Amino acid sequence: MKLITKLWIGMGILILISPLGLFLPERFKAGDAWGEWGTDGIKELVGYIPQGLDKLSSLWSAPIPDYAFKGWEEKGLGSLSLAYIVSAIIGILVTVGVVLLIGKLLSRKE
Image 1 (spheres, rainbow, N blue to C red):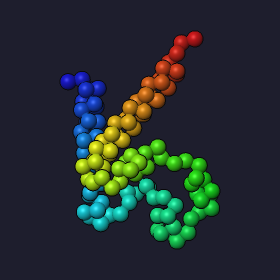
Image 2: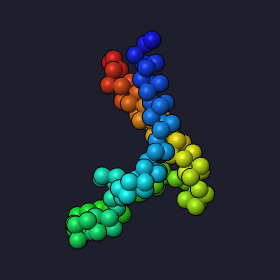
Image 3: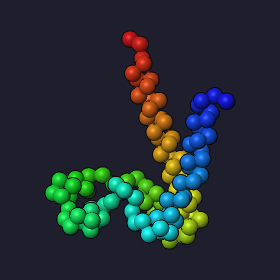
Image 4: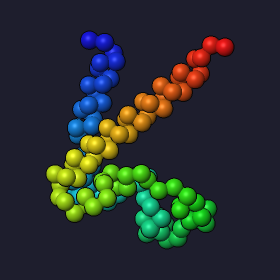
C-alpha cells in the first residue's frame, strides 16, 4: 500500500473519531481543550485578560465556532457529531488546498 493511501486512511479514521471531543471532556470533567480558551476562559483561569489579547480578540472569529453550524448547538449529540465530522473534512480540504497551491506557486519554473 502506498504511503499516500495510508495517510488518507489515517486522516479518515481521525475524522471519524473527531466527535470524541464532544463527550470525553464532559465525561472526565476536563473543561476546554488546552489552548482553545476564549477571553472569558482566560479571565477565569488567569484572573484578567491581557491587554493585547483583549484588543485583538475581535479581529478574528472562527468560521465554524465550536465546530458546529449556527443553530445546531441544541440538536443533540448525533447532529453535533455530524457537524464535527463535516468541520474536520472542511478543515482538511482547505489545508490540503492551501498546501497544494503554495507548492504549485513555489515550484513554478520561470
